[in-house]
Length: 167
Length: 253
Image (cartoon, rainbow over all chains, first blue to last red; front, side, top):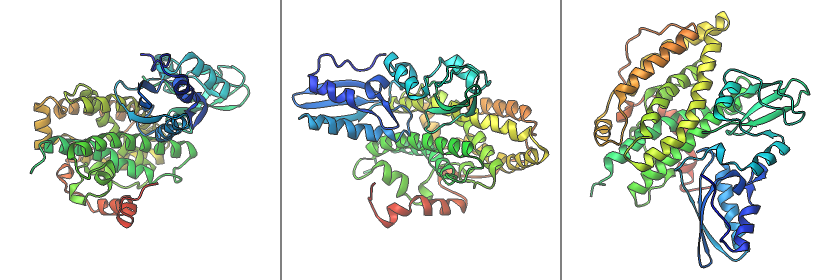
């Protein structure tokens, strides 16, 4: 299930939504994260359905405020509604979003099975975002935020976050 | 006039309060975990649980109507109105107790959510579908620590065994069906506690075996948390949990 389609919306609305990022991961736009599920326009009022990544993610409130502010700046009102179903999955992160994560130093989520091998069985398959080596070990199943686990590269010794697969 | 959603609201509290109180207990460890990694893990789990609670309580507030909000439900009830089980209010005596309490809850929570994703109530089904992904990580975390401590050094083994000896008698309460739970099951909204118990005891058997721990044969503690009867621990929890809203009503960040 792909994110909301912005194509038929006025350019300022598109721009506003494309400029908002996750406050914890400033390189990842909310569109690339796949959390914007639906955008409808009612004259100058934009209705947005947003889905949380993790239920307790404190970034969601910030994102909702940021969206409203960005749209107001362009002369639009906005209502942001949180929707739970269908539940967000890391599969909704776009290829551009995954590339942005990697470039920022966060390893992008593996598929569900590989994720289990990496986090439970300790298999060395998560690639270091610094040197690319797969000789990495998990330091902690939970990282700096609920969505990430902490890894360290055994080759270049760089510690890095891994965005856990959520499916 | 009695709210026509009374039973459903009651059920939402039974579901949400376990996560609220356990989430609070875990939040007490913020900055006090035995290592940086466990500190972060436990507070992350706490955050997940609070997030799930928000969804249940926002829904309950909507059904309640009037002035009710997620905050009034979380922070303005009196002790007898909380519906969690006794297990989750037990204190953070040491790390083994924290892990034991977490595992004994997670092993219940996951099969509970697995049933609730099929609830006829769309909102409960959506919350469960969202929560289940998080709870899988919680159970993995707590099971792996059960094994590390139980099958670790002589001291860690003894402490883990002591913790589960004390906590195990509280696990029976999950499965004592209240009138509300019975009604919700019959309506196709709630979970079937009997079938969850079978899964639960099997999970415990498997993990305890791997962790080299013995399943205590102590009898069930007679507790009625789901009916609002709690231990003296709850007073201390609420004093902290409710302090801001009681001192500065309706304050927000």
